[in-house]
Length: 431
Image (tube, rainbow, N blue to C red; front, side, top):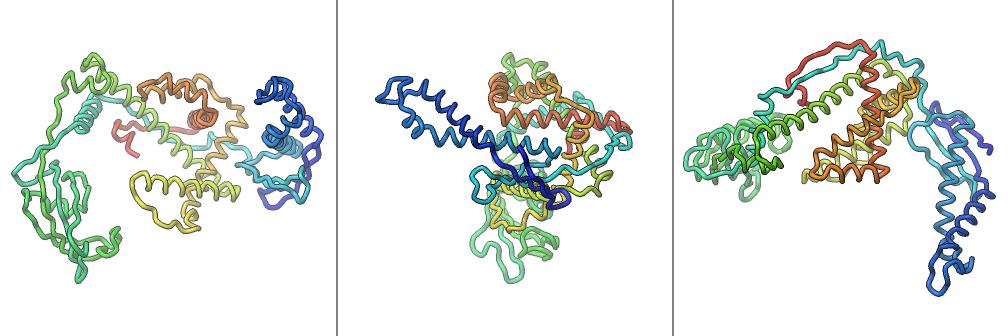
């Protein structure tokens, strides 16, 4: 098989190649023959279905599958022939009128030269889980199960307040008619601080008008940079009622015997899993920042960077929608705002791949299995989750890529110049 190559940019190449028609037809004929021997079609005995009927029924699907398989095989052979290492997915199009002629546009992995990780300086963070961290988590779990009971006194920090508000900014009233209704827990920063503090002391049915100075960059343009009269009315004031850490409470979190020591042990295991992930994220950022600083001058594949920027934009829009927000109309060039972050992500990804390739690093099956079981342990039916990963190639591929990246990050950090910095658990998980 011969494939011609054309340079269309520093990192872009165009490959022209043709599929071997004889092999394609041979594969189609062979596959249709296999189907003919086992196909069950009404009106015909098994193995006696006429070839024309088999062709009509299964021909288009078999041809499409054969064409796709041979296309990938021929393209891979063309890459090997010209010793090309590509970044991202190729764009493959028909070439002219020929049914078997194709042209593939690819981007190449940049030449990073000798990636000497010993010149990098990395801070490795460490942390331990204390009994106080477990106590704090139990308090968080109690808060998740708390109930609220109305009180007649004035509101104080920690209380749940149902409220109505409206604002007067010069001649403009917000809202134009009626009031805005909502609930907040005082002290959790759910409203502008000056307004939240103004709620303290208000009992049910009481209201107060506050002179509030909004910053110039406030999210509501009509209020930004202005001193506004905000009227707040407490519709209801409730205090929290925290559950006791008793047998029933402990059992509700899956500890069947209700034993407090087992409960604390389970919490420690969960916190250790969270801590492990947080420390790896910190190490990934540390190594990534060092790689970016060392190789920021290397030209990157532009289409790969643009694709990553568009992906990051899509993730942000999806996150807004999941939180109940409305992203509105997204400008066609909105992804441009992600180009810098996308470039850094692509650069680190390519460098991690190069380190793995040049040092012949291979995925550690034991680490893969441990990570899979760690993920599964967070679900009620861990074995079902493991089976799901094993039966879903796409899901497993994503996990393999994640574990391989973590292996390479660890490998780099071990060989770089590094120092250790101890953190508390709370500091370590804070992003």
